[in-house]
Image (cartoon, rainbow, N blue to C red):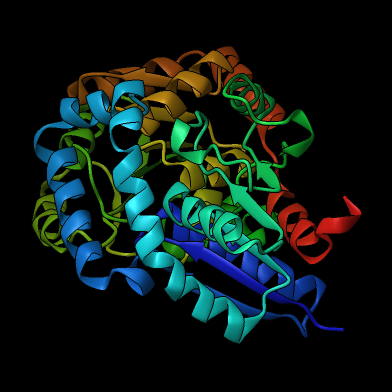
Length: 373
């Protein structure tokens, strides 16, 4: 009998959405007949509010990141917004009832705390026993994830599981599967063959520079810093949806000394990671999981306070990444790594140790057979 699965995320260009896409593909690889509804829960329940909040979030992150640092998992904030959260959930419950009455899901999976909380409260208010799986895509769990009516928590690491347990979650609910990403990132590639295909020098050290799906961060400065270094290297730069950045770089890279392969929004990130020796990026959860699967050491530049800063702390503790506070120093840091093969080899080995390549398939199996776990 085919299963009905509902996947929920918020924000179209986000790691939350990338994770649900990866889970959807994994489910269909195991059970082609499964019916999957993959929806933006915020847009479904509050389409106008979604646009306002997304714009507000991006404005805060770009202009005053310290404000987000204050808000992120602040116990006082969590306590003060509890009544507001309950009111929003109560308002949205009829919409979820209509959706679930029509679709009759065998399991629901949420990759962000907001829809997960709404579904958990819906289950509680209506007395419905739908298996609800929370999938965390960052390496530190905030308190908005904690609900009694969540059946399982899929976490990136054992450390995240322990932090949830410390917040009161039943240890039996924790599944340390990792962060779901598309299985194509596990496919082996010949580095030289991919570089040849892309028009890059086959035997030159290659740095992949990314700023997440939205092309955030000091990418221009990073490119300039790498170009100044005496090290023999070439760059792949991905601008994401940042069209302004892409247009600006199209003019600037012609004047650089080193080879730069420039992309806007790239659909071949798996291929680009295969061509690279190192990745210089924001440590979003999905990008991190993909890079770990590709065995790429990470250079993290000015992570956003909150989840990215926490992801950075985890990766540094595991010796899989280094953090650079001044983007002008990226070139020097990469040169130092190149001059120290043993350090680079140790970072690569550390990356391999914490990679969880089967996360998407493990989540898919859990959703298809939640009662068998």
